[in-house]
Amino acid sequence: MAASSKKKWWILANISVGTFMATLDGSIANVALPTISHAFMISLHTVQWVVTAYLLTICAMLPIIGKIADRIGRNRVYNAGFLLFSLGSLLCSLSGHIAWLILSRILQGIGASLLMANNQAIVASTFAVTQRGRAMGITGAMVSLGSLTGPAIGGILVSAFGWPSIFYINVPIGVIGFVAGLFILSAQPMTTKKEPFDYLGSSLFILGITLFLYAFSNAPTWGLTSPLTYGGLVIAIILLALFVLRERKAKFPMLDLTLFAIRAFRTGTLAAMLSFISLFCTTVMMPFFMMEALHYSPSTTGYVMAAYPLTMVLTAPISGAISDKIGPFWLTTSGLLLNVLGFILLNSLSTSVAPWLVALHMAIFGIGQGMFQSPNNAAVMGSVDKARLSVASGINALVRNIGMVLGISLSVLLFSYQMFFLTGRFVQVGVEVVDPKAFLTSLHTVFYAAALAALLGAIASVRRRRSPSSNRMHKKQN
Image (cartoon, rainbow, N blue to C red; front, side, top):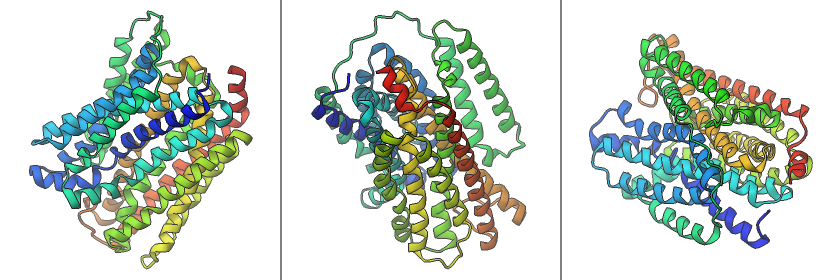
């Protein structure tokens, strides 16, 4: 049953804090990497694992956490995430060696997995179907707000207090969230089912997804034709194929693949992954575009980038509320098509464009993503019965984080190879610019690829039209 009118909004507030904090740390460390590299006297290739280790841990753990939450109670697992995340953050801020920092980020990533795998499931089970889209819109806004404001907040903290402050600031927030959760989140009874845990399936998934993302993210450094790259990808695909075979035959699978037999779930998760691939091509490359090609100052770049999360936060709750009445199809498809247009317009900008015009282009992405994300999340979660909400929530968060990693890696890969074709040598992104014209041409390649990813996401969204609306399906379940 839906929670009481007053309590459900307190639950949503607690979920929003955890969601924002977990997604914020996926990007907040980016701006601190040069400072950390100097402090520990290590190369950029090594220090990048401060970010990569966090995202890979989340991708590997999310489905497993969703399964555990269904067994012992999603509220209990979610609240434990606050404690682990706070502990990991404290250890990060106290790290005196890069290895300790990376290990602490892994612990932090486990805590973030506990939060991410259950937030949407808790919201979906707390709110009635008539308000679910609006609530999903708020949590969706927190995801984008955390991901897109991380670099700006990180820059302010690093400049004022040093790099440990970007981790230490999480500690009091996490402790407050945990204490509040003890009073706000009701304890759920542990399941009476004595299903054995699928250790083999879990191991195959963790090894497969970690190796795949690790090899793909290192392709710009190793090279596409390197045995490390294609060998790692081939082994990862084999492991993931074995995982799928294992899950299809297992009596008690770790990941319920039958969820993908539901058209609304399948099309929604695919569209979400493609959306975040395109989104993170923009998040990574736009600061380089503004500072290297347009020669904006860092402060001006930050103000321009703020147009994205600002419009996203304003649009997401509204689109969620509208989707409660008209369904997700028109909003999700139109939002992704608007993003396609945004990427095409980016490639028409010159090197003398005013900051306000670039901010207007960023606002287009914010509106498009706000139109897409809230209705899509509501449709995906609304297509699943209540008994599998935690697993569905974990998968939804998983594809989001996979999209982030793939978007970052794809943008750097395309940029690096396009620069190689134009200049005859590899150029280190963000360190040197050989030729402004070649730089812009390489960025155009990235933006057109991001437009293609958003277009494919729109096509996937169109496919949901053949299935009943998520609202109507979930009304039958309720």
